[in-house]
Length: 181
Image 1 (cartoon, helix red, strand yellow):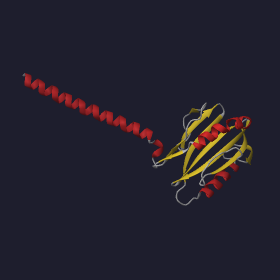
Image 2: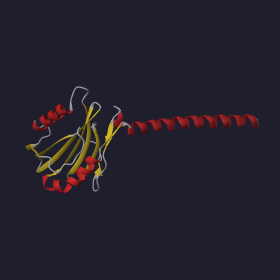
Image 3: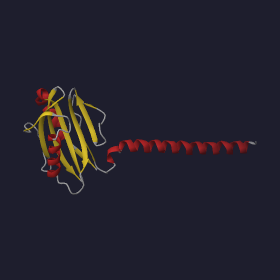
Image 4: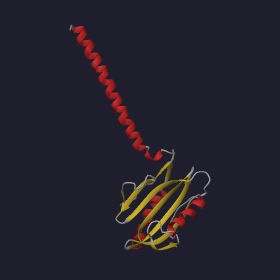
């Protein structure tokens, strides 16, 4: 093969290598984009800031957007599709019934006041309850925020005895809530 033929083969090889590498890189980029948009499949997501002392954990369900922990305490941000027909009042009513029906293996369940919970916005609603779960009485705050056919739920919980000491951290996370479109 003459010098001109060798140069042609090298150029063609380089061109093919660039094309193949570009295709692989694009495929990897798409996979990463799919992971980033995991919770944006319905074009609406949300986020909260991680309060000091809390660490991010793996989401438990496909509706869980953020799962944060500090010892036995936690903050969970989730999203539920409601469609156009359900109002926030209906959704909260159904949610309260779900808690009362013992779907989470609660014992000695009771609703309590939302004392200490600070949230703003006329579209938000909240409930609080205490329940025996396992060997511990836990306290829960659940804040409901509507958004385009969805309801976002921020659930804050800890053992009842430590709840008040964590309420500022819980309120900090709730206040940082943002909808991402």
